[in-house]
Image (cartoon, rainbow, N blue to C red; front, side, top):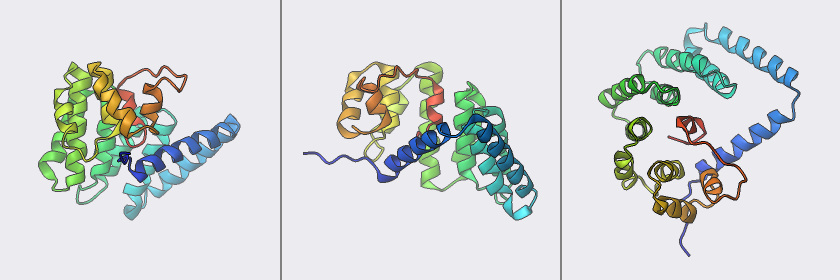
Length: 212
């Protein structure tokens, strides 16, 4: 029996996301809106403190992203990056690039990703930027070859990468690898048609947890 290379943090991220959805669905909409407004107000005040700007803006970005306001989420991810004196807040740029791709702003996303590749020595940031570049090409031009080549070098692949390759290329080989090695992933459930959901495949898929 082959050992699945599913990463613990990947599965934990999915479980946390599902728990968040369940919890929020159980709260009346009015209470949710009041809580969101209160949290935003608190974080906006926090962002006025010099040593708290990056943290506050990144939390604001996630809140706006969860609420579906991608424009405000983008503004706050960029603010989080700019608030870092050393300009090293690369996770913020990565998240901003995902939002830009999901909004069809491919050129702007490419510019931000190039900035990371030019300036960083962080291997995780480099890998994330290269992965997003490859996905950008796939979404923009339907050219999945860069992503396919990159997937061959990724440790254990990633469920999101395999799902993207399958949906864009139509090659069931990627689906088969996905189902074999990531059977409990969100992508595998959808690909196997066991979810009862016909998920529309768009760049917004990048905004789900762990979809680097």
